[in-house]
Length: 554
Image (cartoon, rainbow, N blue to C red; front, side, top):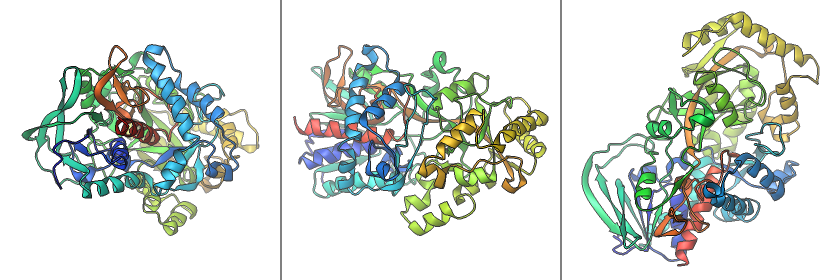
């Protein structure tokens, strides 16, 4: 393709936020140079591997499922979850949150629908919260699963950008790693960096960092859209909020490819950008080692229904609200408070068949490939979806047994901490089973299950009917060792509502913009301390759109 001698903008990072910003610039007739340290196969970045969940408020899908939602209720949930602090760190995060809620309850669905995106009709209920209407969690289901998952979210922006490349408005330079933002007279005017050795690795596979050359490119503005830090375990541990969350885990597995390295945070800071909320992160507690990995330490997250018993490393049941799918970071604190960095799910075959979903586009081929026949076979037929069954059979974190003694023996064979007592675990399960005899209970988790089954989606496809775990009709018993899985960065470059990077004095750094995860999805922390799920892709889209439109209007 033709080289752009004087592009109107340089976009650093060819992930979702970068594609959205480029799309908006191309719509305005602007020329864009897109740089990325990976090869073309990785276009779309981490978003490609996602489940494609999107946060909408008062959507047609919600209304068809009988869900009553509103911007007011969504704001109550967002701000109750965010727990924003002082204005210095969170003023712009608050402003971005208000703007994003306007977007999610307004034009977001129409904007994406016009580009060809569609959602499955069932609305999921993620992060159900901690039993406080003014605290963390979604009061209603808001997780809209994209028909086509992450690859479809990428496609609707990649296609018009690639069309812009054909027209000569977009130039891609892959295997170009930015090492410096060029600053002259206080303004960012371009980038310098290293040309990496050519790579034909498949998408997501770790690539060489061999340097074969250098480059320098200039433009009136640079938009940094390079993602977070989840693939850089050293940086995750360095910035881990130990005072708030407990000690950093010794054992981490990666929910993102190795190229999610966080390098551009320090590079942007050197150019004058202010980084805020470095220690705010969104890593998951339900990680499992991938038996068929693509990238180093490749991990998959179990997206659980509410029925599995959640035990700590000692075999003790976590107290409310630390139940599956309720409060991710609160449960993280409870896990790390034990002195260990793992925990256990104990469940039955009936539960795994209905309640286990796996994160990732590659773990959901029926929805990713938009095949209704496969979807019906996988989701409604007897048995767990085939990717789940494959993990049960091959995954190193899974134990299957016909009785508690055999189950605990298997758990003890893979423990990284104390040995569990089979008699104590069995009594815990029996105590829970006694509560199932009636439709009511004093067991808070069973109350949660009963409430969940009042949601049409949960009752139909997501939550198993309560049953005794020791009933052989629902066996075998299953245990899953759960590990800490790295995923999202909630802090980053502080930006205004035009995605302009701000300096320590609160003023925009001339020529520098930031969007997506590197900007804390907007403002350096639109989610505050927590998140409501389905908000990460939307944050990339909203902040990338803001950057592209603001720069196009200059």
